[in-house]
Image (tube, rainbow, N blue to C red; front, side, top):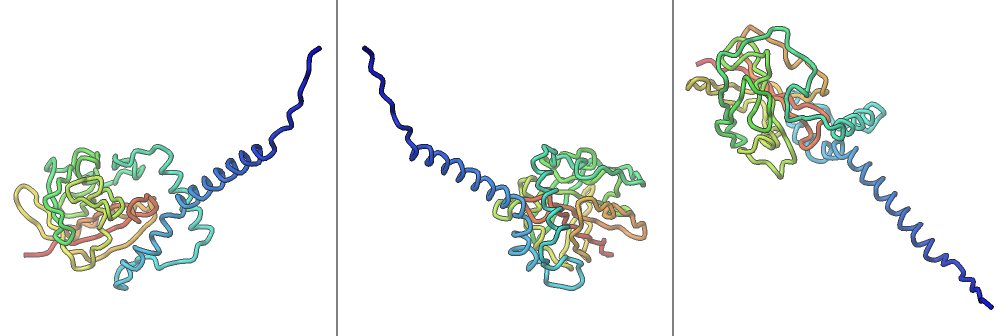
Length: 241
């Protein structure tokens, strides 16, 4: 005659599994929330104070989170996980300047003494930001009349390396009005003095405007560093000898 035994289920084990599962979901939620709001937090703590040194530059002041800000943050988080290749400067904008200037040199160099950037290569033919800075296609080249728009990568300031093109503009937020950018084209050095610094939305194409009254240079990178939330725009004008 066979004997059958009944084992009572271990409720404590099931509760333990449920707690672990619930905890994992909670932590995942915190990480996702932190990832989305990291740009806003880093902006408020580190970068808004750095940009508050003058009223000449239209830098957004610290603001309370509102639906527009939340939507912008979620949008930039989506861009980061969407697989967009931001090492290609053309992926930053679906835009081509109407005045299609043809570069007369394949590359030139720029130096920014304050950031300890020396003779960084700027390509006028390639848009690969991992290998060099990029003079955006269709914009002027330094010394020409018009606006030379130069793109560069940024990341967390702690990772700044002036020789690494993936981190080269990580400390660009430290630049101020009056600082200089040196462009060397065909062995001739041209000095540009910064006259305006601003932060714009990532779809703002006004940065490509070609003002033919003089020679201008515009540096473009993402801000806060380490995010694609907004664009830091640094404008400089050729100094007359």
